[in-house]
Image 1 (tube, rainbow, N blue to C red):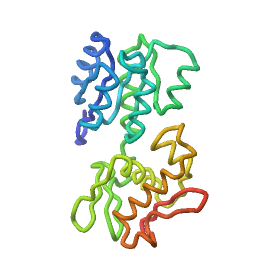
Image 2: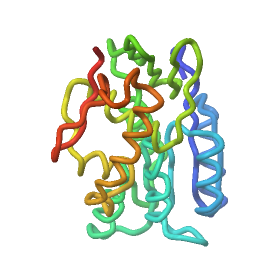
Image 3: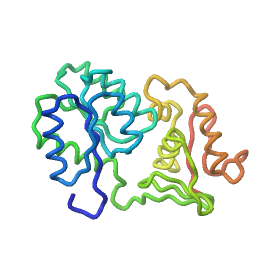
Image 4: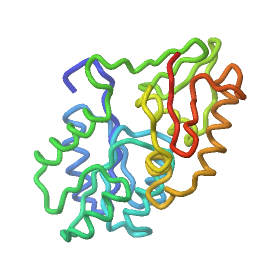
Length: 232
């Protein structure tokens, strides 16, 4: 990497040793940190343990379909997912993109093209130039880059799902985030009508962050529409 930001961590999920070896060599040569998983369960465990900045995912895994892995990741993780697959059909591409993938590269692929797509995915996920990764309110501070919240000088323990909801709202500070959009981003497209999930998790977040959870000042409900984060 050519700047002062920490090296991005890439999780490669593929059971073809030749592809894994080629990706590992090329990514490490360019300063990336690399983790590898040969099946879906190992991938989900590695993602929970090591928190990658981007996932490169093959669809044809020995234990589960790659779309299932995307669903598992999207339950709590918002990092970019680039799919690698020998499946060329438009229906297959639409399926995984709807499941939460950010890009789709067909095998065989050119290494330069894949690396360019990976760099673009990392850039999109990073805070834009001029955008602060730290959002401070009078009651608590959210550090989007470090993925943590502090209140009264101490870290606030959030579950992965609580963090994901808060992250989506904070990144859209001041704007209404619809219920369906929030459910889709946090749990996936099959959960868009499960509005009870949001009520439960917003109540938990308010208990942890709001000075007066019964009269929220920062995590605002727009009845029947969605939620909004107000800085102050």
